[in-house]
Length: 152
Image 1 (tube, helix red, strand yellow):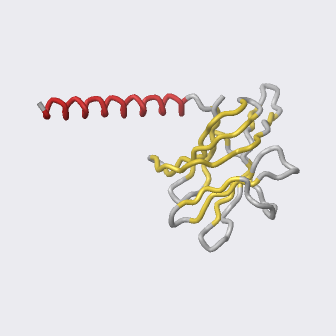
Image 2 (image 1 turned 90 degrees about the vertical axis):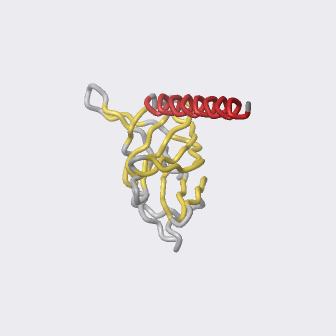
């Protein structure tokens, strides 16, 4: 009897895991982007609005700047040095050649997970082309910036 119960539990767990995986893959395929953002070279002197600690690598920080309509992502090493910084501004080219930008507000970092090509950082924000949504920041295996994607 216990083999039947164990087998049933394994089948149910496997089915739920598979369903969750399919739902996540479907959600990721529906994200807008990838967006490249814009390199940011100014000093970051205010306090970060969101911080995500990454074991043995320091932390990721989000800065909201009063003079900008998009937040800045900056990884800080364990010794306190900012490695690089990137403004997370969604941009798209219009048919007439102009570039349209969306404002991003209240971006918060939630967790980081390893993927095939590096890391995915799960975020939430409020943005012009989607409202209050989730998204992902894609990082390479060395925590370098690749792109970001947002839900609608």
